[in-house]
Image (tube, rainbow, N blue to C red; front, side):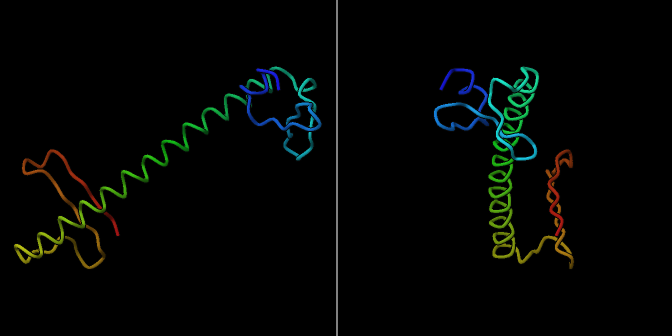
Length: 106
């Protein structure tokens, strides 16, 4: 495959020839796809790649946060017989000075 195809992604090799799939699902020979469409395709694929990576990072952050708060809640209950939150499961945690807050809505 040529370098242009490798950079673009979204291309399929059929019999040694590069094709791009259009919105209808048809394979279009790469040389018939307009340069502007190739550029747009590449731009969208790059943005979506970054979005997926960021979403995965947010998922990891949420998992760590929930684990940390779960451990904190267990410690509060064990050491001080205190329970955070109300009947609906909403909880708010904040710094002593009140300048920073973490809210969990159930």
